[in-house]
Amino acid sequence: MNEPVRAVLRGAKPYATADVGAAVDLSDNTSLWGPPPAAVDALRALDASAFARYPAIPPAELYRALADYAGVSTDMIVAGCGSDDLIDGAMRTFAEPGSTIAFSTPTFSMVPAFAAINGLRAHAVPFRTDLDLDIDRLLEPRPSIVYLCSPNNPTASAAPLATIERVLDETPGVVILDEAYGEFTAAPGFGLLARHPRLVVLRTLSKAFGLAGLRIGYAVLDAALVPALETVRGPYKVNAAAVAAATAALTAGRDWVQARAAEAAGIRVRLAERLAAVGFSPLPSAANFLCVPCANAAAVAARVRDRGFALRVLRDLPPITPALAASRGAALRIAVGPWPVMARLLDELEPEAAACA
Ligand SMILES: *Cc1c(COP(=O)(O)O)cnc(C)c1O
Image 1 (cartoon, rainbow, N blue to C red):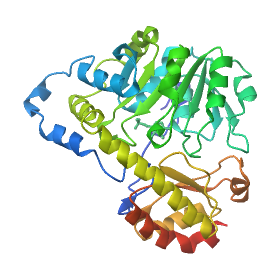
Image 2 (cartoon, rainbow, N blue to C red; image 1 turned 180 degrees about the horizontal axis):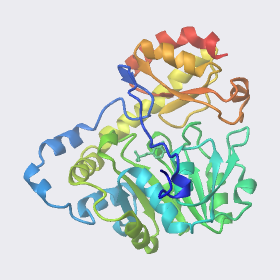
Image 3 (cartoon, rainbow, N blue to C red; image 1 turned 120 degrees about the vertical axis):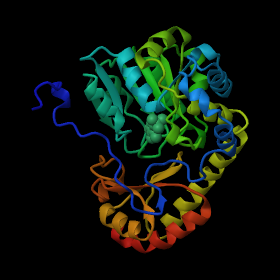
Image 4 (cartoon, rainbow, N blue to C red; image 1 turned 135 degrees about the horizontal axis):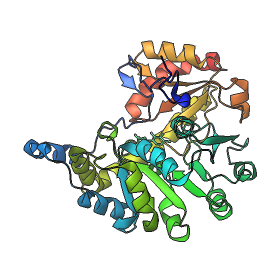
């Protein structure tokens, strides 16, 4: 039955999100503050009769807004159907099938998945015990691509700037720096582009910008590399409604988004302190979520879900910190939302500290 399917796809299971079955979904790090009001206004103002036509390519007003946000010229922008689209596209643009992509593990689950589909060899190197990258091991096979995720999903840790710069200086290949959570910390990616022509910075409107449902992400890279990535990504991957909402979010909505991101960054500290006070050991976070090692993560998540909160259960993480070794690689990933929501979550989670130990 599977015979016409490429070998790497036989028995493939499409990504599916189970119905989280809970009133408050803290399982996917999307914004609990909702979309920016300016984006909602822009969507309401759309003339739906225009949807009979294809959107303009490139979407000039969106590319101007993204370039202004990133502090670069418009010829350095490539938008796509979520940054997933651009991770996939960058692999097909910068790595021949059979060549190597290096990344630290654990990291974003779509990276090994797209690597396999694209016929790349995955060189997965565990983070060091201090959650920094093991650069020598990462670069050892001279990979075509190094994928760095900072802040990293699912550990929430950010790579030190000196580490990112060392990778950029020492690798002969392309560096994909995924800053999906860059708004929640002082992410350095955009500022590194001028000195590093093989750097591809990826960002998304799915997290801090509250527009995950519209599927829009973007790459910022050397203008000389843009035509190849645009060609691989293909035309019309960003739809007209997403263009309008994202442009408004980046312009009229920008201050609102930045204020919510700053609020989330403050709340993550407060949430981590409260969890630590009752015996949890959350990893340090630079993102809008916490990674909380928990030996009985699945059972705890099931109980908390019954009380209205969906958390992500992580399994088989490498034992990179003492807390992850003690939990045998099991953890809960918890998105940070407005404090009243977090206060109610704490009421349900604090009694579970013993079950996590
Ligand atoms: C959520 C996330 C993305 C964003 O994916 P989209 O396709 O833009 O929704 C990218 N990278 C990481 C690490 C993420 O966690």
